Image 1 (spheres, rainbow, N blue to C red):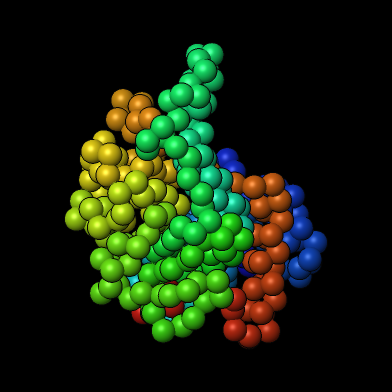
Image 2 (image 1 turned 120 degrees about the vertical axis):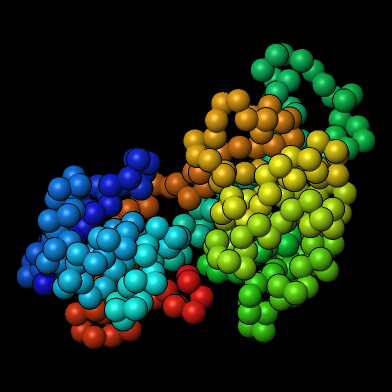
Length: 326
């Protein structure tokens, strides 16, 4: 069996380290692992590999991979994988679902606390050595998470971990998902997509943790932000195209929203001239909410477990469903 390992990315954190490939070779001495670190090595490896362990696969590349029998992505998102072409050939696709759930959930709670406690305002004045105690009035007065409602769009592994942490702070947690019938621990109520306005009207904190699908694309614009309670916080750790960024900025500038934290952007890197950089009630992180020490240990272990399952003909973990696209 030949396995192509091709996980080269512009983002260094998402490139598989050499010792991760070495661990796979040690665990599976009878499997040939082709570690492609160039376009030429990748193209050559695709011609006769049985398995592609990668983060991206284009339709033309899949067509050239005539022996391909399974694709596993090192990421959670699958927009970079040519799903229709693979599914047409009955080639299963699995992802690394769950490995970023805890770090992203911790990130969400960190930025929610920072915005609720007015830390961006305090840190701004710290840099200029200005004591602003008497300016913590009106909308600047910090508020408690306890008793507030956090709503999360998308209730996969990330949403479930966010709910657990929000519960620990005494928050009420609600969610919106495509399938609203399945209960989730820690979530008081799950709304269906047709109940979006009713859901939004109760969210003091709105967290977007959904994948990008035809149903979530451009889901949130000016009418939706207007449904949120005045002073609400918006946190996006999902996909930028779920949100109309101009509408979000307008709701922030008008004072209707109390703050926002964005980890994803329509264009990355975010251009230095973009208005978001200078907005005082916004926390921007450069798509790093999933970063954490030990990331690749868990990602490689997940792939290794699935490779064992694939060789034994067993069901794969975190298989992407053709009808859902995730």
